Length: 316
Image 1 (cartoon, helix red, strand yellow):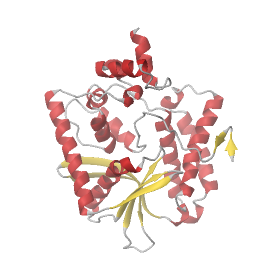
Image 2 (cartoon, rainbow, N blue to C red):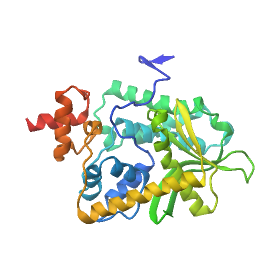
Image 3 (tube, rainbow, N blue to C red):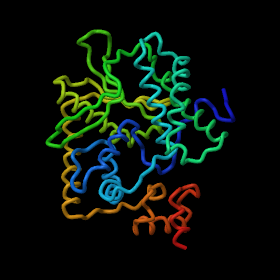
Image 4 (tube, one colour):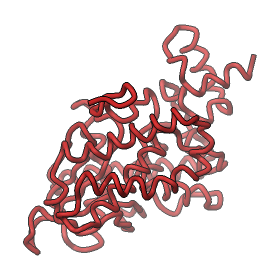
């Protein structure tokens, strides 16, 4: 089936070079960015990922508090997450594609009125394309599971915990039980609307849900049995929650926390030039980023659609 030339099984927003966004965690990033200068009060998965990807980008975002407006992919992911959150709050038999369509229609005006969405400058045709691509992500849930059978414990569950001495905060998309029994194992599930990673990078992506599992255990005393990433319309990446897996994830979080606090104390942040510079909103403020853009542009190693190329034109 096709709509406006787009197949319904098209992967949502394979935006080359753009960092993955976690829709729920974006709200925690906004809270962190509004805090006074100095070490952050906690780490969230997104802030930790940003720091590990490029310390300079973290500095611009959280110390200098420069704007980092979400792009098309992030806004669409937030919309899809919201629809699925509301859908999974319905009784099991009512979690149908038809009900998801109705919810999408009901909440769409909230997205259409966002300043960040308006700033994209979409005309009517582009808005239709955006809505259709977002819908393919939502509809993609049925390619992975039958939502009516999921035993939901909580949706959009905010968690705060000390993990290995690190103050950690996150929002779990979905906490469920493996079956209807009250003592059935817990499962942590997180929706992803971007492109699923190759097997080489899957373990790194699972770190987020393992930290969620660790935080749930720290808060409730019950360890989830498994943690999953649901790449809508594509596949599920899942891992068992073991002591070894949790220790590894929490240890990595501790390393990030120590390195981050040292960077803040010394006011020294290392740039990590690479493909992501083409999608960094701060490339124009970063000498290393500009140099990387110039090199990649001269050698044809960057897409002409990379938004940060505008900073090269500004320096001419």
